[in-house]
Image 1 (spheres, one colour):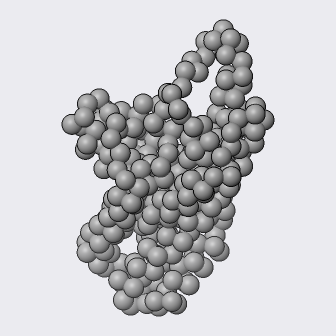
Image 2: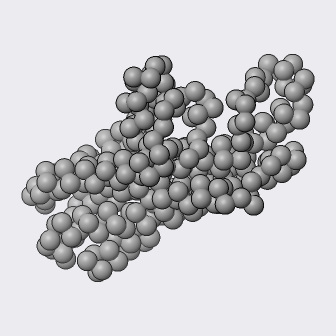
Image 3: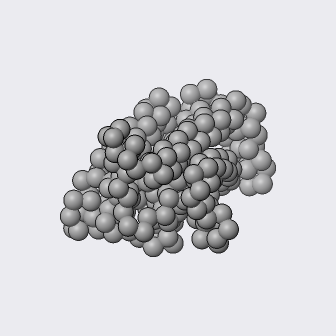
Length: 274
């Protein structure tokens, strides 16, 4: 197992994909967290100008902007560890390297477990990058307008820690998806379509009433936001009115990752390869 895990890390870090995705993640999160923070800071400091420009800056009472901005790292950035986790599996099928992998390690369950565990670590690494950028850009924007950054509170750093855990679990979910859908193009399309379009729509529909909200809280994005403890979906009215406890959200994500990986391991992973 240690050799198999080391091999999986080598497969990731000897390609360009991981650092390209890390750069895209950093730029994406910095643009959203820093940009929204700057806009909200300006709008709060200049309410008349914001109103004249047609902006609606009415925020829910007691809303703390700092965790909202910092959570962009996970609520938006989670697509990147999912993609990298899926590519770690589908790339073997696309480039026909799976045969050599199985020759080096005949126990397929060992190979799959190594991919699962290694992508947990890689996902956590992407989480560190994402939260470093979101906290840095978000705090800079808030401080620039004299707003509270909450960097001196333990709640903020607990949020960051839970967010990194969420990103790690998303990496494992990517492995499960890759085992279920071995076609690389199909896996990428599914990730983008579900995370960027389908799930936001489902979360919006689920927020309509309490009955659907109790179901919507088990969607993977909702569970991830519950684990982290903050999300821009809450202010955008796309989240369910009910939310799981943070540890429940973590268990839901872990359950999805394990279940998808086990089903894929019992089906497509056991097929003959050439």
